[in-house]
Structures are given as C-alpha cells and as structure tokens.
Amino acid sequence: MLEEERKYLADDGFTMPDLGLAGRVSAREPVTLRATYYDTPERLLARHGVSLRYRKGDASSKVWTVKLPSSRAGIRHEHSRPSQGAGVVPPQLLDLVTAYRRGRRLAPAAILRTVRTVYEVCDADGELLAEVADDAVSVLFGRDVALRFREIEVERAGGDRRLLDRIEELLLGAGAQAGAFVPKHVRAMEAFAPLDAPVLVAPARRRTAYAGDVVTEAIRRDVVRIFKHDPFARLRETMPNGDTPVHQMRVGTRRLRSDLQTFQALLDPHWTARLRGELTWLAGALGGARDVEVLRERLHRTAAADPLVPADPRAVARIDAALAARQDAALRELDEALHSRRYVKLLDALIGAVEAPRLAPLSWERAEDVLPGIVRKPWQRLVEGGSGVVGAGELTPDLPDDDWHEVRKRAKRARYAADAVSAVVGPEAQQLAKAVGRAQGVLGEHQDAAIAADAWLAAAAAEPGDHDLAVTAGRLFERERAAVTRARADFPAVWETVMEDRNIAWLK
Image 1 (cartoon, rainbow, N blue to C red):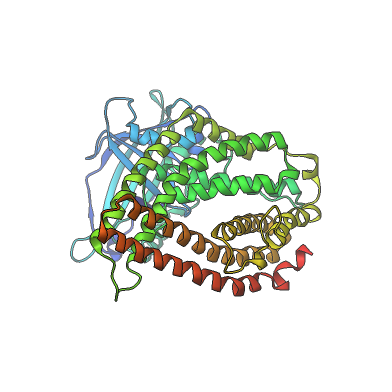
Image 2 (cartoon, rainbow, N blue to C red; image 1 turned 90 degrees about the vertical axis):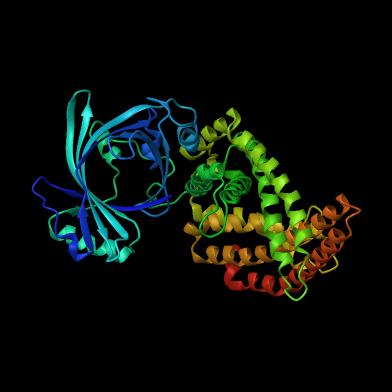
C-alpha cells in the first residue's frame, strides 16, 4: 500500500491547535510503541530510504513492516506482516530488501520508544480523512535515553492534499516546524553517527564536466532503475500507469548494456565485458517473463480491435490460458534468478559500477570535446546501416521483419546515447533522443505485431483439430499483419522528422 505523510518538528511547549477547522476531530487514548529498526552494519537500508521495522504496543502489536521509497518525498510503499517470533523477519519482507542489503546480515540499528496520541480528522459522515499523530520519541541506547524529540506526523487517508495543506497551516501557525522529510529511525541513527551518502543518489555536478562524469551518471541512472523496481517485480505488482516492474527492470538492464557498449572508449574493456555478460543473463531471465506479458496484453487488445467482428471469446480465452501457463513458468524462472547468489553478486557489481567505474584515460577529457564523437557512432550505424543491416531511411515495405527489427535495435542504442549526453550537450541532444524515441515507438509496434502474428499461428498449430481456434487465430493474425503494414507506412514520415537539421546539427 502507498503511505502519504508529512512530518513536522515540535518542542515541548507545542500545543496541538484546534484541528476542528479541518474537519470533525476525535482523539484516541495515548499508546506507547516500541519499534526496533533493522539494518546492515553499513546502514544500507537507511541510506537508500528503506526501513525494516518490528513494532509492538498498539492495536496492531508485534508487526513487521518494510517501507520502500517512491519518486515523491513523503510517499512510501508500505508492506506489513504479523510477527512469526522474536527477531524472525518474515521471509516475504526479507525478500523485498534483497537489492539493498545484498546478503549482508541484519541487526538492530535503532530502538525507539514513542508515546503517541492520534487525532482522527473525519468528514461529516464520519469517514476518516487524515490522522495527525503527536509523537514524543525517545531513542534508546541500552537502558539509557540517547535522544528525545517530538514529531507531528500527518498521514493522508480519504482526504485530498488540500486537507493536508490546511492541517499544515494550522500546525505551522501553532509553532511546529516544517523541514526535510526525515524518518524517525534515520534521525535516531544520525544521533550516533552521520549516515554515509547513498550510492544511488546523483552527486552534485562539477563545474567542468568530464566525459567520465557523464558515463558514470548514465550507469547510475540505469542501476537505479533496476534497484528501484526489484522489490515490486518480486511482488508482481502492476504500476499505476499500467506498466510493470518486470518491464522497467528489463529496460534498465538493456539500457545499461547499451550504455556500456556505446561508451566503451571511456571504460576498461575487460571490466565492461564481464559486466555486460552478467547483464545479458539477467536480461534473459526478465525477457522471458516480459515477452509473454506483452503477448497477453496484445491478445486482448487485438481481439477487441474491431467490435463489429468480435473474436470468439472462448477461443481467445484458450489462447490466453496457454499464455498464462507460459507466463507462470517464466515468472518461476525469474524468481529463481532473483533469489540466486549470482544475482546478489551482480547487484554488488552494479553498486561497484556506480561507486567506482573502471574508467579509461579518455574519460578525463572534457565532455563536450569527446561525447559528440562517441554518440556519432551509434547514430551513423542507425542512419547508414552496415554489417548486413540497412539504414533507417532505406527501410522499405518489402523487407523482411528481421530487417525492421535490427533497425529498431539500432534506434534504441542511438536514442540511449543521445539521452545520456543531453545534460552536457544541451537540448539538441534531448530533441534527438525524443525524435528517435518516436521512430522507435513505430518500430516497436511493428515488432510487437510481427511477433504476435507468429504467436497466434503457433497457437492454432498446437491444436490442429480445433476449428474455432484456427478461425480466431487466423483473424488475429490478419489484424496483426495489418498493424505491421500500418507501421511500415507510418515510418517514413516519422523518420523524416528525426532527420531535421535542428535535431542532428550538433552531430555533424
């Protein structure tokens, strides 16, 4: 579940204002909570906005909770499980922090005793809109109290953000202090020693950018995408925008492989070869699950494409059932990979790639002097072709699907390269990346339709005696090949916009 909250500091003299101005208010009886936060010796969880907590003392006593960061401050993903015994972390929660602890042992890192008074803010019908918690926190060190602080925590329930803004006005007016969103356990840990900077957070940019800075940042962004989506791939959750974490992990893996190849001149070739080999293994595990995921999505979309000539729902259901079985098998293989020692070693290698990439001497040259020439290579391969692949402008409707697919792969690499250097080169590189992205979208639709068409024929061939299935598969095949034809017809106009001088002048 998503948790959205805001935090405020208050001193001992703070008095809770009249929250009735925000809604109907009722106060619960104060409770005393004891929370033990677990972390690695290096505080790897806390450094990356992750927490693993065992708490007892309230109505939901003896509960383990993992909180994972989101892209927005104050919003975290929360997952809880009941206790299975003192000091025994539920396996499902331990699994969710795999990418951040990477096999390191976990031990108590902070113990907090909190006296909490909760005020419920409801609407006229009694629906809970928000909870305001007044927490008097004691950070324990053995039997001693090492630190005390008071914190006001406002958690959104059924209300909107305007309600949170109104409560904030009341709290600030009463003397509370707003500040950076700092979780309690982080504040507690930093009372003993400051936390090291998180590896996956971008460092401050240097005044003079070197080529090595750009490739390091590209590597960091790719690794962040893999780490960020790892827990949700294990949960098999669909994201709010309909995307899936398996897809995003695969994108991060493919993009990192591409960036390591594009920027090979800036890196140690033996190091990149080993890393790319392991990424190829991970991409294979993710690809099996993702490919079937795409086929199932496309099956239902293609079947419903023409409401005047609907596909036989029973035949579509049989195809989907076969795909679902394939997907389950692929997800089991992915689970094995994500739970393997090989994967944990790869995660360590990825962190090492961010902390200390193996840079070649050319990486210390000024970025603007080196990077356009590096990006020019994948761009020329896309435009001019070579190695048995035609250039993008030479694609014609009569060429095989494989030729179109090869151009798509080269478009992806050229787009990644332009995007990676855009912070230094400027908006021209970003314009090119977006333009190539649009062309890549058409090529991607072409590839997905071509693969789906073959899949529907294969489904019919697997059941040669099923007439209804054969008819439905044939109809689906025709619709997919029509989509292939449309993509081929659309591509020249899209490619013409890519080749506009405003996009490519910086590469000449």
